[in-house]
Amino acid sequence: MLKKENSFLFIALLVFFSSLFNSCNKNDKKYISEGVIVFDAKVINTEHELAGLAPSEMTTYFKNDHFFSEMSTMGIFISKFITNPHNKTFISMVKIFDVKNACIENENDIKSELDSFQLEFKETNDTKLIAGYNCKKLIAVKKNNPKDKFDVFYTDEFNIEKPNFSTPYEQIKGVVMQFRLKKFNLEMEFTANEVKQEKVDDQLFEIPKDYKVISKKEMNDFFKSIQ
Image (cartoon, rainbow, N blue to C red; front, top):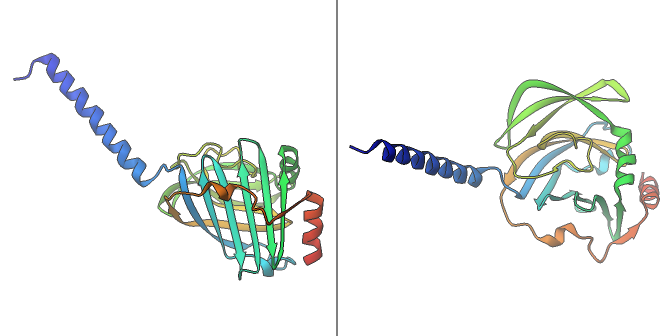
């Protein structure tokens, strides 16, 4: 028989290696810090002037807490967004035919943009499996129109800090998997349908050299000109 001290040591080691194995297995499946999320996308207001240019899908790449999202409509209208929580910037890029514009927003610009889409959240006990991830449900209420409510689902099963910087969901401690955003006065809903763990190129988080950097006003004027 094992001595009492040895028995305790054996049990402690067994628990340690069991938890280590489960942790490694867990990291293999979820809790990733680098990869891709593919979202289904739909327009909320189909009567909007830009609704016809709205894409049906958004692909988001993430690495080192940076995010790069891209949407395309028939390869003609392409919009890209880069979120950098470290230097607190948000970059919008738009390509229409041969026109390629980029706009860099600082923290004040971001706050001003979010003021038009302020949300309050009500917790619920509801959950849903989205793209293989366990998600918790919140009810979002628009501050400027409390009658306008919608569901938000988020998960804490990613290894990402500040996943919602530059969005109305910054206070949520998890990756939003079903949500709404409003950009250039066009509101859309996104729902994740696939998550892939893969290497992400650092160059995605930089403005391509063939894009012209313009001011926020110039970018807004540009969108007004195509409506």
